[in-house]
Amino acid sequence: MSKRAGFLVYWLNPCIRKRGGQGSMRELVVSLLFGALVLMPVGARAQAHHQDAADRQAREQAYRLKLSDLSAEVPSGIASGLDLLLYDHYEDAEKQLYRGSRIPENGSLASAFRGNREHDGQYQGFDVVSIQNITPRLRVIYLALEYQMAPYFLKFTVYNTTDGWVILHSSWVGEDIFETVPMIPAQSTPTQ
Image 1 (cartoon, rainbow, N blue to C red):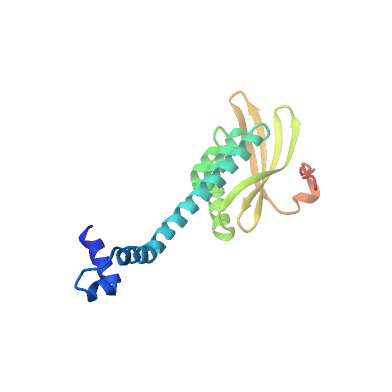
Image 2: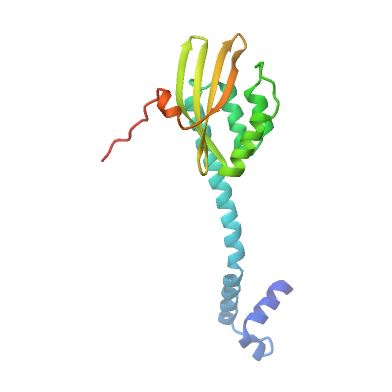
C-alpha cells in the first residue's frame, strides 16, 4: 500500500488510530470504501465531461447523416460551408460558400453568422425550406439555419457551371418567406 493510501486509511479510520496503527481487515475494508465514496465525485465530474463529449459527437454524427440525405438537393459547397458553422469557423464558411462564385468574400456573411451565434446560441444545422428549379442549371434554394434559440432564413440563387454549382446571389430573408415561397411538405410520422 502506498504511503498516501495508508495515510488516507489511517486518517479516515479512528479505530486504527486508537490502537496505534493496528486494525482488523474489516476496518480496513470499511475505511477503503469510505475513501472511495469521498473520492467518487471526482470520477463523476470526469464521467459527465465524457458524456458531454459523447453527446456532442452524437449530434455531429446525426447532423452529418442529415446532410448526406440532402446532398442530392443542396449543392455540396453550400452543405460543407454550413457544416463549418458547427465549429464556429465563420470566415472559412463564407469562403467555402462563395468558392467559384463572382461574389467577393468581404466578411459580411461571416459577421452575420457570428452575430447569429452571439444572439441565438450555437448553430445546430439547417433544413431545406424550398428548392425551386428555375431551369435545369438554375435553382433558388431557401434554407432555415437552425440555432439554439431561433432560425434564420437564407436564400441562395445557384447556377450549375462546368465546375459545379456556384452561388450567384445570397440574401437573408425574414419570416415572410412562408407567404411567398412554396414549401416542401413535411414528412408526417404515423400515429399509433
